[in-house]
Image (cartoon, rainbow, N blue to C red; front, side):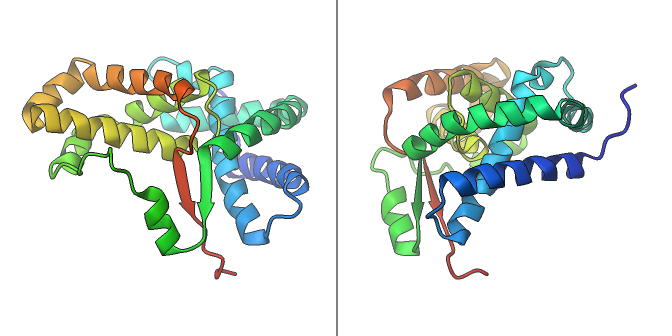
Amino acid sequence: MEPYCNFDAAAENVRELLYDELAELYWDMPRREIETVVDIAWRDFLHYLSYKSGIYLSPRFREDRARQRLCVYIMSKWDKVRELASEWIVMWSAKWRQRVKLVFSDEEFKRASASEDSLKPHKKLDEFLAKTDHLELQLFTVSNLVKAGELAGLDQIADYIIRDEANALLHQYGLEKALEKYREGVLAERILRRIKSLSKVSEPLLIIRVDVTRA
């Protein structure tokens, strides 16, 4: 049995580490923007550590055990984590500039988010997703994004890909048939193909609305 470890404390240590590094890198960025960047980078780096340390590859994954394993990894290998963070931030920043666009008004967000190619959300999309193993899909998608070298905005991009591919499956097959296809692994195959296709895409995948009015 692994010893108890305070995950929140370990994660906060990581956040402070990233904040210092990113605040220095983006020294001219307003505080509200840097807070947004750090919040996303923090989650991304925890995913990266979980993947690189093998936690996400464990059979019979359990979130509570994964948090403990990651906590122990961070606290027992802090010097290595700091070294990894310094290297990772360089790679992450390059992907951030490529994949993420910050906007500062609702109107700008609507314009940036508009896509002529997107299918209208299927009326059964939320019902379909509720009948899937969302954690498994998220882990699968995030892990393969990291494997493909996609490091920035992992939670948001993974969620977008899952919903978009699930939506396409629903439009093609309808709810019951789409669920059958999901159980056969078709959704996972679509997600994997989508991730592999990202190497041919240079534009942003994630549009983030920054509220500059918040304190």
